[in-house]
View 1 (cartoon, helix red, strand yellow):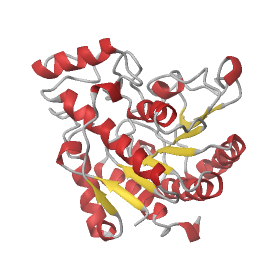
View 2 (cartoon, helix red, strand yellow):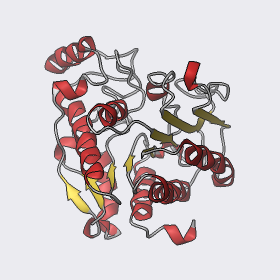
View 3 (tube, helix red, strand yellow):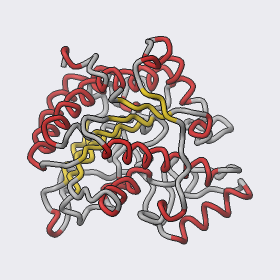
View 4 (cartoon, one colour):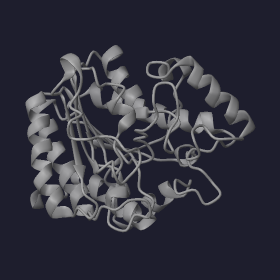
Length: 318
């Protein structure tokens, strides 16, 4: 099967307890809907993989790894200003998110026309030297660095439809002209992290290789599709060798933390169109990650819509 789906108890452990929005039950909500739709029979299932310290160091600093490891042992305190609490085993859980994404990357580049989806992944707020916004390690940043250093793939397109701006990816590669970055998110004047404005297009030789599209609170599928045309044209013009989608479901109407009003059809459209672009531009190489999403029914529907689109089931109606 050309679509691989990563799921398992080790991935589900990446979640924060005590009523935290990013709880460890998110994978189970998605998986229940997958089974109900019969998608579990149509994908190649893959077990989670633990990343090594050397792999994490491709993006993160040694000091950040040391801090996460220490707080993982005690399970006490926060890794940021109050959004990301430590818990016992946090280091291993976060490293499993990264390792699963890296395993997906390796599998995709081995042969053409392969795609993968890692639902508990897409932790786009973590910086090289610190955690932020529920994100301990930035699996996306590690994946981009791994594509370059291990697989020899330089031009990567990163597309983000999470309600929150992917600041950890954007600012880490703001000066990198070979990262084609396109991000549709709720306007930073109304939502964390307060960044990602339209005039942020990259710096130095990377100016013009980054596209930020702030969406107003209440933006719906009609507005999404209109702005998506800009994203698609931008990615095509960048001629990537590999495409990454961060399919955060917190942009779905009714999410408790955000104010956008998309339906899962927006996620299906994005995944299907990037599927087509990947086939056109880069031998079908496409990795999708789940990202945010804090209403369990919404994230299950949105992520299943992504899976269906990557299986070609959603493509005729896009």
